[in-house]
Amino acid sequence: MAKTENTGAVDLSTLDKAVQAQNDGIDVDIKGLDGKTPLGFSIKVAGPDSDRQRKAVDDLTDEYLDREDASHTTAAELDRRALQVLARSIISWTPIKLDGQDLECTEENAVKLFTRFRFIREQVEKKAGKRASFAKS
Image (cartoon, rainbow, N blue to C red):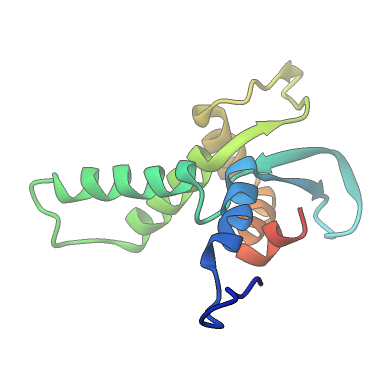
């Protein structure tokens, strides 16, 4: 990191590139159930400090707070919210077929994909939640 000449203080603007990398997203190469065999497609996801992911968290939190009874939260509700944040964090994916049909990259289809194939969700979640994943891009 760059230090300013006068004070020796770190110039935090050097971190802007890291946030931009999260906005740009990274490609997660999806592997099979064994965690090793490539399935031949990738999913591009934005990072935890990206505008896209932060907006998803804010929108879902507002939705939750607007409920009549926001005091009772279940594990299923927390999981649903995490799934929605992840689905909204998807930027694109390479061509995918599901049940013989092309699967367009939409929030609704991301939810469908991640619900049906939990192991795919877990791979994307793991990368999307770590700032370090975006430092290499």
